[in-house]
Length: 223
Image: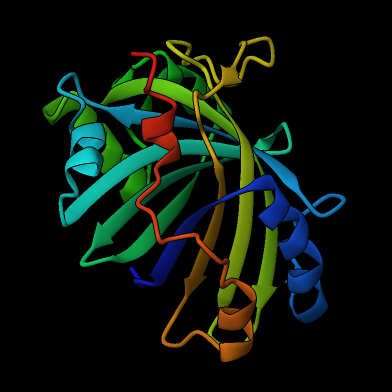
């Protein structure tokens, strides 16, 4: 698992409008983007004590969370992801997930993962059985991604963050989501060993500050 640096900034709509052309001038659009953006739907897991949520709110130094994700409404590619954060660095593991297993997971059935070969899938199964991990909420949002080769930099603009409340049937397009209360536009910057100065200068937003914003936490606000 490779760890990366990460900045998050909560920005205003005017900042979003200003950043788009500046980023496009020096960075390229992610190849998965359609008209410069894509729609992301994730299903997050937590236990009955809300361990992942509480650790985020409390700023626990070493934490992890699991989610299932797909892009642009295309359920032919379903990804199980585990995101870890240690000492301010972040890392992500991924594994492809069959649709039948994803549907069962959305219902909280860990037995659907029995016999899976991928270690990450088996890890989720073990933690569902031992820690009581269960699907908690859907998180929808729009992302505009930019990439820059030196430093393996990725800059994203995330907005229109929506919550599924108690709905976990994330493969059902009729599952209603609503705007997460007070959710901002989020600028995220990720890089490996160094952040090139040309990108660093572009993403400096006056009067903004580095934030520990969590889309999952924002979408649990109504619980």
